[in-house]
Length: 441
Ligand code: XUL
Ligand code: CO
Image 1 (cartoon, helix red, strand yellow):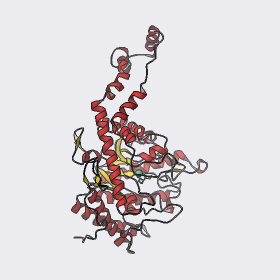
Image 2 (image 1 turned 30 degrees about the vertical axis):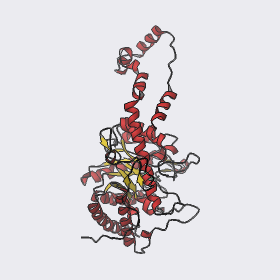
Image 3 (image 1 turned 180 degrees about the vertical axis):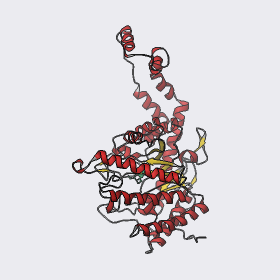
Image 4 (image 1 turned 90 degrees about the horizontal axis):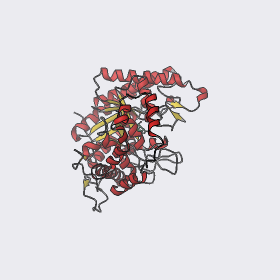
């Protein structure tokens, strides 16, 4: 039996409860009511909200221009394993007080990487045993684990796409340990985000060879986990750039093409992130729709970017209108396949009060709740679906239906066009659709 720490880090903050939209209590949910039924499921089940270990408990507000501003109490111990256990205590206290059920981590968010593979592996095993106990006593579960194959200088030229085979093998050893940790903690999914799987210059890069290496790497990682009995999903998280100039997992469509080409489509789905969609010049609604059409809408990293600058600011969600557009796709797809809503977001560098982490997650959860409620009403109380379907009604019968069924040749289409003569224009009614959205948000 492992002894768990009993220090309280977030003093004076109690369980966060739903108090409704008229509440003036900043530390209460105004819209996220976990037990409220929407479209046949309660909000807790729809969202499976998850806390990102790295942003909430590891990042301390450092940026390229200055050191961290948030001196958390759980970062004081000098012994790496004691520091890791203190951080785990703080994390589980926070997640439990938020009333969330899930968390996500990178391997070396949990404990500092050691000087050798063996030391890192031993440290990971010790903290995983500790977390296993924390999960058992709190009921908090692991939504997904992942491996940080982008921070260590050894990965500066990539991990699975490194031109040096020995770096690729080093990354495989690391991913194996992270998969073992995820499985030991009953993780429901495993994520690959290819931070440095891309290039800074094509002049020194054999792109075709690197992509094939990445396909082979993912296949062997998947085969290893399946052999150990892992039943969860593997997710790829698209992002177009940053830290590389060009990342191979550019966007949902690119990743789906890659997965199909490498015969990975039955085991892998997508973990889509809002700020990554923005960087790819897409909306989140677009990325989710592309994934849903391929049956690959796996999970969401919830955050937002800043439209006045072009980098990954990872702010907490607060745009109800855009989140509602995304929730329309979410409801139409029947929700997520295996994943949840992970707040891959960080409080600002100058947000230095302990309660700020709570305020941020409360705002994020309320944004998603409002958006889900609005999307559900748009679908059930407005003419939204009717109007959208009406635009395609010419395909519901007659020649349109025959075309959809593959029963018309190109010559048939030519003859139909001749018979029809010139056509009247049909309005797309975009403003009407926008007004409906505005009415319910
Ligand atoms: C980076 C990012 C990562 C992944 C996991 O932009 O989103 O934190 O979610 O590696
Ligand atoms: Co992410």
